[in-house]
Picture 1 (spheres, rainbow, N blue to C red):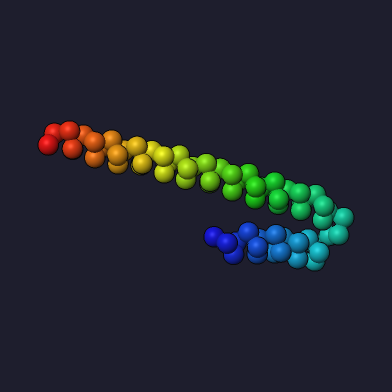
Picture 2: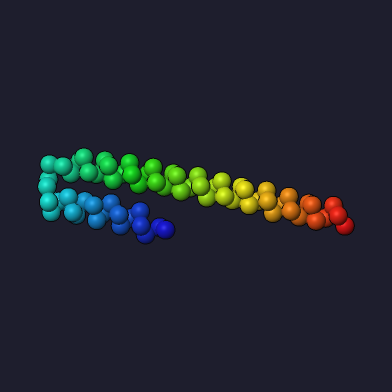
Amino acid sequence: MIILPLIFPVVITAVVKIFNQKSFGHILLKTFVYFFVITTIIIALFLLAAYYFWIWYWGHMLALTSVL
């Protein structure tokens, strides 16, 4: 997970340098916006999943202990 954010922008900049110097800024901006949006969405999904499973686990454990 740590390697991808380091390699992805490098690959994009290398491809842009090969093909067209003028669109470098435009593609670089798109790359960073895409990266930050996708990363934010993934972090939010994992936080929601962790919160949901934490509540499910402890709710389940409380229900089991209240029966005893």
